Image (cartoon, rainbow, N blue to C red; front, side, top):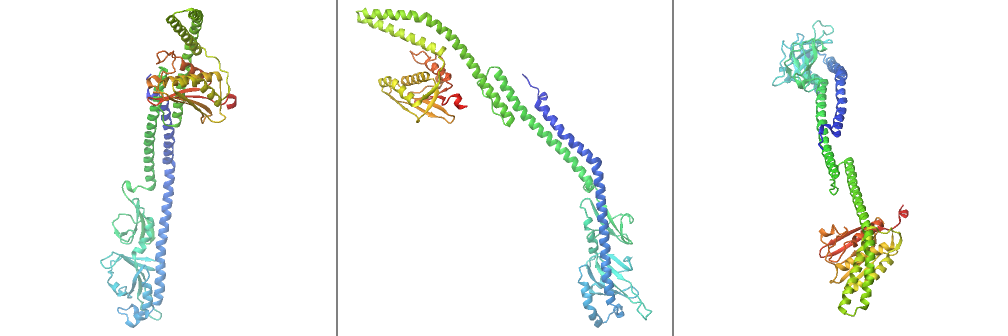
Length: 561
């Protein structure tokens, strides 16, 4: 029978399961793309707007803090002589501590003093005097002060910006006083933008007066951003977010969408591969089971089914294998029953047609033997009488095999059974220089028909003697209890053993290797053992002898329950 894989239940089930797994995933992806993506975009934009506003406030706070420091410093530096081109050395020493304290701040490079005309007078430290201030440097007003710069970094000075407080006239003088300024580290101001930097997505820029733009480390960059497209920090200065270009510069929401698409496709491919693998494996296992069932249907009951992995398939395999064993046993029992029925009819006919004439012949031969005077004739008559007994024995075995008597089971003392059987067989054993030894556990009992069991053991002992004829030695008869509660009776001889090709047929009726055997002795034993709910098994090795194991119940079925 051919099986089309596409129509198999396993294949259809797996494909349906695959669709059931993929459809919710696709629906979820569509819902996310239609609803959640837009929501995430709005949430992301709101978060970025809040972060930009926070950065704007941080920049303004930075400038206001420096303005406050500048106001305090200006109040201390109220001597007009400080704003001359050359301040007196004595005066510098007087204000040096205050200046040095200000310069030690992290964000301050130094202090600059300007004349009333706005020209740089001198700086503290003096090395900053050559920082490159020119009339081209942009000036931006901020809350009553001025921001000069920022200026490009040079070989000697990094980027800087001067926060200058314009000069005022002294009381009682019409001449305006010069101005003072803090030379600030411009990178401290741009560093406040670092929280806005999203690598490979967008980066912040600070655009100042004059059209210059700076990044988070105060480096000038070329950008075409419009002045009105950002958030104003101070008049003329604005904060911008520049979106990167290309696939790597996608927004977080777009990136999430692409990653979701990749995840869906990857999951679908993995599921398809997984389901294909499972389908092939199940189809292979199911095909093996189908082939095994087809062999059983064709009559092959001897080939076991190969075990399969997987709990369900393994259980199904074991169930089919048990069915095969039971079917084989049922067929064998049916054949054996039919054979016994045929033999029963044959035995009945033989018993009727042969036994009665044999009885007459035996009686006549016995009478002739008593009156015969010639010794040679008497020996011939004796031989005829023995052959008549042999024919009667064959008929007796045939009747026992074909129609064994029903067992009348009861408790049997095993030790007493073995002792009595050994006594019965010892006389024949001594004639062949054979010693029979028996052993068993104390107070051991079994449940069987006593006469059947004696017949079985005597037959097995006689066979063991035949195997050891002319050799001598010991026959061991033993009994022990198995883990399942059965009593195992064992007859072990020291003969030559039985070849394997003979051993497989040893319980078949009329099968014998003896010149004078009927082939029914062991078959009758097997029938009697089976009638008493037992089993018989042979173990034999050439040159080592044979062991026959008879397993019988130790208790009745009512006691077991």
